[in-house]
Amino acid sequence: MRLDDVDELLTTTRAVRRRLDLTRPVEPGLLRECLALALQAPSGSNDQEWHFVVVTDDATRAALADVYRRAAVAYNTRTRGTKTRRRTLDDGERATRRRVLASAGYLYEHVHEVPAFVVPCVDGRFDGAPLADQATAFGSILPAVWSFMLAARSRGLGTSWTTAHLELEAEAATVLGIPFDEVTQVALIPVGHTLGDDFRPAPRRPVDDVVHWDRW
Image (cartoon, rainbow, N blue to C red; front, side, top):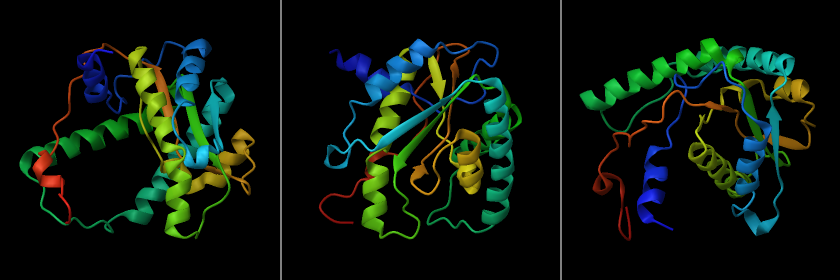
């Protein structure tokens, strides 16, 4: 294994929204390869209580896209003005945030055109559960989802982690036939071939600004 290749994969797997090819279908075989690799990720107690709903059918994608849009509006309405920051963003970070918001807006407008969705789920409901239980549940699915996204990147596919649809999770469950009382959806991952492959490392805060040795 060449470290340079691994490092490039880790530093260039971006949240792809604007650069998804909305006209090219995603081959089921590619999705299966990525999901097979995702299943090698660790899970709590090796329980593997995960599920992945792959959506490529036109009518189902359209219905899920409608839920996504309405949920995004509901989420933004509910959370507007509620987020506070512990630190002030510099000019570069503010510019990056504006680009991210514009990119999210593009996805909002075109989500119905995305050729495939993957909805990762985990067995059980965790509404109001103790934090340790929630962390265990989500920690048992998130590594697999990230592995899926890395595998997708290595095969020329772009992905983006989205959670807005969870504002209307029960509606999404109805669209997808997910047993809502027994299974928790974790995210909705748009998937498509990328337009170009020239992804670069993103601007990030310096390591020393965010790493705390031995104590905070």
